[in-house]
Image (cartoon, rainbow, N blue to C red; front, top):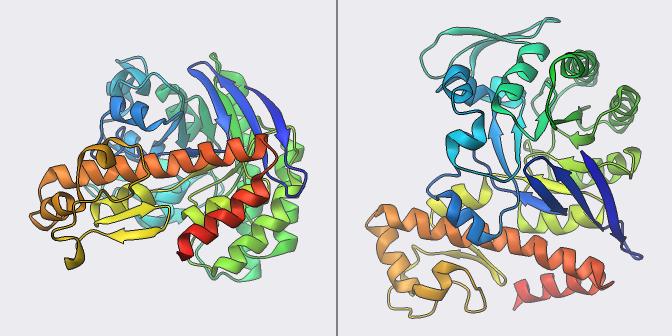
Length: 370
């Protein structure tokens, strides 16, 4: 994977770039909609295209358990299976083993876990995590890492990052032996909320050498200022010649602040999950569509938004659908939220390129206060 930085902001660490994959180029900074099970919930690929999505995320743990690798292999990979012809990044499954699976046991070999679907027992190793992702034919493959809860003790965080480093070496060795296409491999920095451990983990990942680097273990319940402190500390430790990906983050405010600190890639379930809960993101803040104030409101959620939902539907109609639990509510809300997140990144890229990101950042917060 070739990555090129195209512009650097002179007042912050924000930058724009482009990386090329077998399924197309991606302009950064970029937000990746989460399609864990081979679908971004409630929308079809054509609607993702209309929202401007460049790349989406899938998940090893879920797709390995259901429908299984053999099914997806018969379609030539995840792209053919789900009718998506643009790039895909797949998570290794490490976070899902940590957060979903029952009776998990972590050893040097890998993670032995119980499926959250049927209770069956499985082992996820660095090697078979990469094997599954190669079967999915992901454009960007993530190394298996050990995730830990917040807060964690220093020793627990150190043990997890050291295991993550050893697993990272095994992932790369397996990848080098078996990858035959244009797949890229990213390493993951861990270390909890300890600056010295983040430094050690970043140095280890850079020493192993990957096509890109991710920062894991953020947005796991820590205070916002701690999350930003860890990002502030860790991002400069990663090579500027490679994409820098902060996993599982975040709110629109997070995206603006982390771009300012030098991050290039993001993913989060927030726009799709909150859409299903009746929350719509707009330039002036969050709209809770269930509020009675919208019962007869003929305006769209965001009058300046160009998404399909805002072009065609009123708050009154969206509230009616949501209160009636009509399935269309989730679809229309999701289209709007994805459009908002993706086009926030378009605006950020334009602002960085035009040397006005600092002013954009101030205007962004000013609009939310009005």
